[in-house]
Length: 212
Image 1 (cartoon, rainbow, N blue to C red):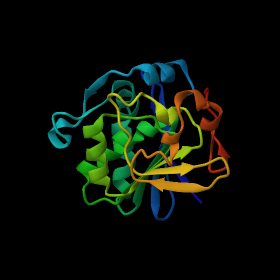
Image 2: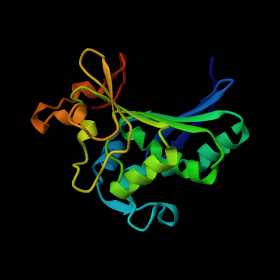
Image 3: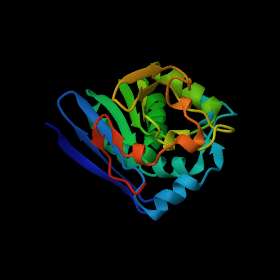
Image 4: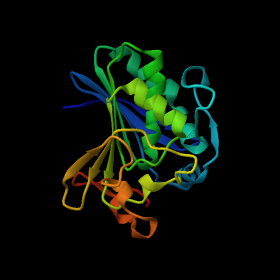
């Protein structure tokens, strides 16, 4: 049983999500791409500095993803602070996987809080410095699920972007493989012309509704 605490919304960036909880966990979820504004956020591949005081001067992230997630930071904080006794789970699909930017901020601000991150079909969020920082602060409490030939985890292209760890790859039969880096035995085994939009909509047997 889960209790709904608050809806998250920002009109400028069309950010949508919610915070809910049960007896032991609080869940923070952001919606994936469903609107024209969302697709504009997806396509805005400019990088901006990110948490340079803690991540380092070379740390940079996708500007559109940053705007989408951080637009509801104060709403998330208001909802979570009364639930410090629970484990906080940040989760989302597709564009919503930018929720990891929020998770990083809360990990630094509330360093004694138990936090985990679960994303599905996440694009690359930031550069190598961002990925290394994220891996360090979450210390194996972050899982990034990919499904077969899903095209979205292959974007933006890896010239200036790098995935965070740890990848959990789901093949066409539903079998799971864990990869600590972008290794060929996981989603990176496929080249661009083999990728599929269709595979972005189903994860672990559940269908995600999005304008993909």
